[in-house]
Image (cartoon, rainbow, N blue to C red; front, side):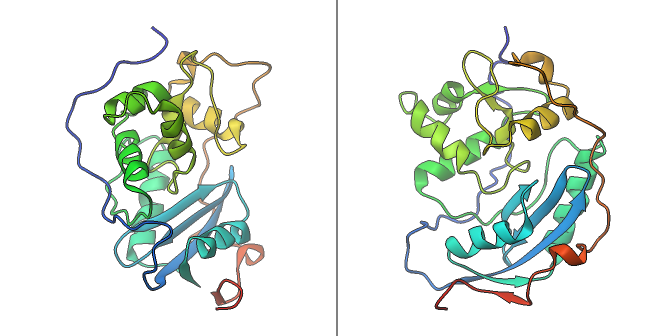
Length: 229
């Protein structure tokens, strides 16, 4: 079989917050931080309760715009949760960590949160199809909606949406960055389960965090708010 079977091993729930993206609650204060890696900027944001966003390979300012569009009040800087996240991600990229033990503070619909929790249970080195994710989440007929929810995952790598592929064992989407999906699956040793179309992009070495603070080109203004705030 190209696809690995579902793992029934109980895993801790990762989700902490059941806020809706469109709710009218006050702005949530978050810290945002970036470091440069060999695979591009690694961006993290966290509230006092947990990680709210992770992205790899996109400009830091784009990450900030996404945070403000989600209703967060963003201040540049780190906190203990971000520093712990960077440490665990560095261990992951070094090949010594296979599971993350980080608090998450996510905003989404109940359906999205259920799909993200399910994706968080896909074991390292395995791949599931979008249909398998929907079935495991108890929504077997909603696999297309499940695919959309996977695409909206706000904390890539930590919730491993790169481990979700099409039923025909081709890669599927990854926010327009298919090469990153290939790199992550190669790092985890599961790329051999995937049918790759065309010539694979050179994967290069594992990323290493260049420093504990972002380069000056990544530094934003001290505060970054949405227009009109």
